Length: 258
Image (cartoon, rainbow, N blue to C red; front, side, top):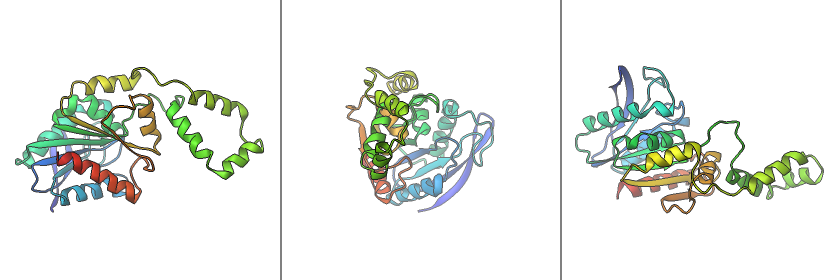
């Protein structure tokens, strides 16, 4: 397995990419979320790419414009469609043996793929898609319910409640939020993502970390009966737990192997 770096153009800027080479004809276009560089938090995406490449599938990860080693202005996930298209074109040029490319993104990288008319990918793996409009908005009911499920198993939290150390007003507002009915259809950003994804005809798999606020918020804004959803209850946002890392790799390989 060989790893090498190269640059490619995107609307006048030079973007930096890392390619984990492999002989397989299906590859992974790994899209980073937020302002994260292509190595990922704690080098997590680099390690993930190594595992996928060692299984026989090439992986391309890159810094989008204005992030990490890449030139240009950082416009956020909503403006990243040209970056995704340019990265895919570069991937195919660097690996001419590819016949199928699977786009994979976590958090707003998943949302970017949903908004980009698939960016030319043949399949999508969408992990914990970002559907939260603003950081200050009220937590979705799914998030609140998960919070209280966990608090009710914590003896220290129960003691705080029984000794009056929990503000009653805040508690009542949270409980009312927890029993709000789920929306009948996606709203706001979730509706935009649904509309974007509706244009995609390829295979889609959603991966949800059960201990992640972003993933739970997505479930609050989506049909939880969607058969494309896979959830790991004890995983956190970046799948840092060893068992969660193994599960993530297994899910991705399952899609890659078709």
